[in-house]
Image 1 (cartoon, rainbow, N blue to C red):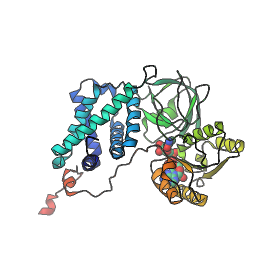
Image 2: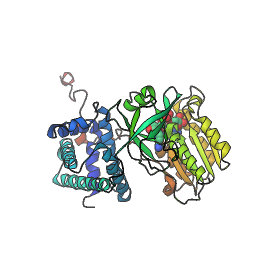
Image 3: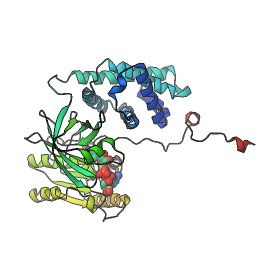
Image 4: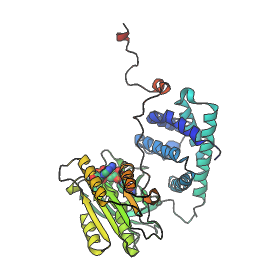
Length: 399
Ligand SMILES: NC(=O)C1=CN([C@@H]2O[C@H](COP(=O)(O)OP(=O)(O)OC[C@H]3O[C@@H](n4cnc5c(N)ncnc54)[C@H](O)[C@@H]3O)[C@@H](O)[C@H]2O)C=CC1
């Protein structure tokens, strides 16, 4: 690699805590220097800002693991076809990113740091451009999918069935990004909740997130017959090819969606010993129990355990139930393991299962949107750079 990942990582750690200001600066710089570009972005940029930084965090985290970075960048580049991203757009983004990083780095910005970021951005953007260029023109940039069925499974959760306008090749366990004219340019990830079907329909499980732009529209407003736009399939948490190992799967909340797809695929492939833990916030939130029961009834190789506190139980209680149930499962050595659920599921439950003998090479989950490390103490340099909500000297106290 032409740059030193450690330099990038150290530099990123300096600006990480000012994610919000940095991304605001980035977009202001990008829009000021590139008239017309603003129209390509959602009207409400606040969430977009979080997403930009989340992607950046993913990239920096992976710089030191080139084997993981390559696949991620290729998928990101292919996915950017849906934004009509062209090679000539990348230098403008790079210039604004470097300007923003520089602005918030204070004295820690040196020539070496700038050179490393420039080189890193060149490598990253070239990989994305190459991956997008390698996609045959016959592969759509996006698919327009008709909503052919919708079911409100709980007050805040909808199960949607979509029929893409052209064949949509994907593998069970993958996710896609979706967008609706009701919320232009707001793309959000959802796992496909079924194995590929011959009628080219697919199922999504959408939980309404408080203040969620797209999820609110998809759960509350979307009507039969209207169009939801979907991007290409993403994610590598698919079944390990040619594996005969027993399986342990953990589905937390709507993490049930990809697990259901994997179970359908296993059934088509003949099945193998599988235990699935289905966790929910409460009994009333086990939104697809009929499907769980039907799968267990039909497939002798499948065992399911439900983990949900009684109505009114706390989330901590749900977490405890799941972790106790998994502990009781015992030895996980030699298992293929799939985890799907909130971002904190894989680190916590994954670590527990590794202690129970699981091997990390056989543990699969999608990259979760990272949460930012705001708990780390500030270094003295950062303390002065931090935007403070109260003045840092209280003059009345000085008197
Ligand atoms: N492919 C994937 O990994 C997918 C991930 N998701 C994500 O899953 C989440 C689902 O959220 P909700 O439905 O609101 O579920 P939730 O956050 O209410 O969790 C449901 C239950 O899972 C268990 N649980 C959750 N986090 C845990 C943890 N860290 N350790 C142990 N047990 C835990 C608890 O019993 C909890 O009550 C969202 O963040 C969504 O983005 C959704 C679909 C697919």
